[in-house]
Image 1: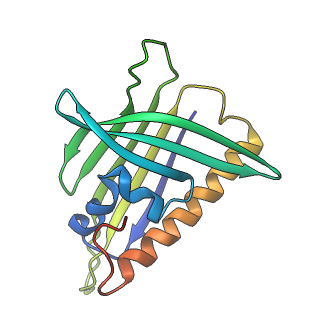
Image 2: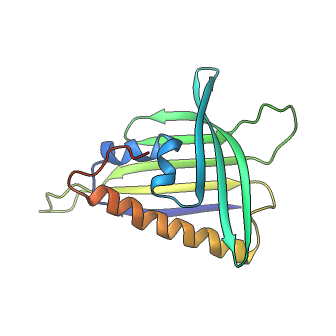
Image 3: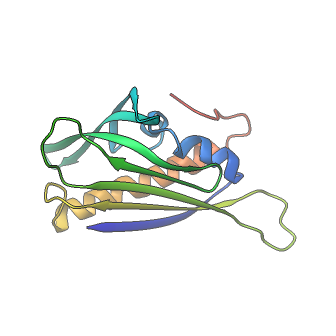
Amino acid sequence: MEIERHTVVPATAERTFALVDDLAAYPAWMDLVHDVQEVSPTGGQRTWDVELQAQVGPFARSKRLRMVRVVCDVAHRVVFERAEVDGRRHSPWVLAATLDPVIAAGDVTPATKLTMTLAYGGNLWTGAVLQRVLDEHVERGAATLCALLAAPTGPEHPR
């Protein structure tokens, strides 16, 4: 499964990047990301333990992942990949964020097109119901991220 979503946020690419290049910032704007703890780097790459959680009616589905930042092109692109260290084989998870400045004729307000892509190779989060729930989380997350970035003195990196 791969989903790709686009949104235009009211901030520069640099300010937006501060909220998407560190997984520890995600719980402040993406409620699907329940808990994140940064752990010792792996091969010099920043690494996080991430817990995802989604409610489906009376049931909650959760998933723990160890994610490593494998690409960090400041203010343009960041990519995280699942990298477990337990010696077992795991379904791949890849999260990518790409930022492109938006330049509108006569508009002096900074804006950035944020493209988020999630590729998942397992079966826990598949199916029409879970796809709808995931889409709802992504939609709410985009709105919350826009609100954070629209705040004139809002945090650069909420925790």
